[in-house]
Image (cartoon, rainbow, N blue to C red; front, side):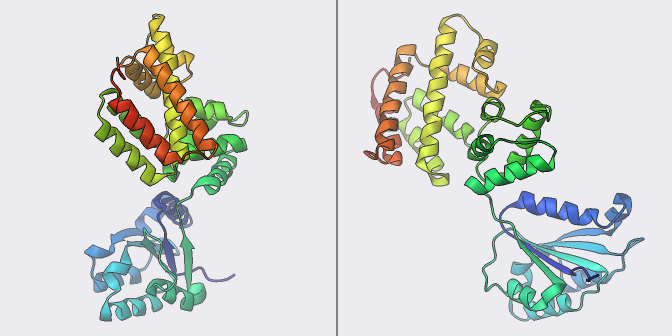
Length: 329
């Protein structure tokens, strides 16, 4: 049986995936009570090379191995003569220690740590943890659901992916919540995701609609451009259309004497979303909301037919809404 690595180089922006990997690695140390005695977590910025050498050369307690997690070593030990001393430390690590180097960014191929790892062969395990997005995130959602004993339909996984963006931690929490919701007895469907999941960007969409209602064009435009900096225009446009569709429906219910709980239940919304939608619907008249919604549908058709770019359509919508007299109630 081959000897396990003595150094693990984990790099990438997906801190949730890195944290789960560390948890799995710690579990391999054996009994949790004993394992906790053999795990040390350090920030490279606050430790000297001699202190690190002392920690990594210590013998494990009642276990075959100890684990030392060192965050952000590149900046601390990558300069001048310090780099050579750090490499010497890595080369002389005892097999009873697993030193895990964590860089919360993607290291370039020519990075000195990656160069050392390539030369170290089997002594070092290297893994990249990039942020997942789009189809990769959707596939990950389906894989995690199967691991937990449940299932997502492809369309449900794609929808959840579009709502959580690159946030794997939130995605995992939503997967667990949705599987419990269906009681693990059937596959999660898009309708389930739509009913239970609050999008990562939903807060900014709510804030933008609030700014529209206040006729605050500068604030609304600023929020719109912040959203556009994070993702493509089409998904944002879809969220804006969906938001105003919900506002039309909520306002209609309010005019028929319904309350917040009724709006939340009848529109099948998450309670948080239901409360926000109801509050915003009260700020607009039904005719205004219907006019806005139809205008959005016209812009949506223009975008999908190629007559207008998505970001231009959104800019046009916000500018017109906040400058047109009588846009709010």
